[in-house]
Image (cartoon, rainbow, N blue to C red):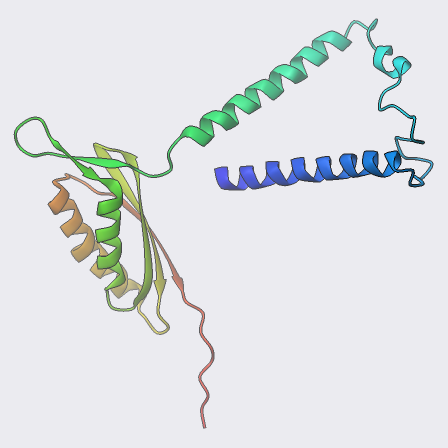
Length: 192
């Protein structure tokens, strides 16, 4: 979701800046503008003195200004905090039996699990991402199945072999997984 929000916000900001910046540039260079446009000529200003002071004496103006600015600040803080959150798990806490525990790098476990899952019968590509807490990791697996592969068989092999082996080797009690499968597109075969 964060990736979509980032793209939408950047797209909207870019579009607004392009439209208004381009119109200011075109007006400044002397290009003719339509009669309904905000700017009329080279010496025109964005907001006249009357426009800037029109609502100051109204009782609702300043509370609305502060509420809108406060909302903008809260949205900016939410966006900044969301950017700093990691989407992937950096390390997994493994019970070593001595009470201290050991740390296993998350990308290492992802890589091993990904190569093992990609080697399963009927799987063309696999993508594994670890999420959650380091003491209770969760996996998100995306499988691209070959044409003619049986999804039930691939899922059975994944859960019985690969995930069980990963859970046992990392010393975890549970390793929940969300598996998404899709068939790889292929060309139709010609029959002669």
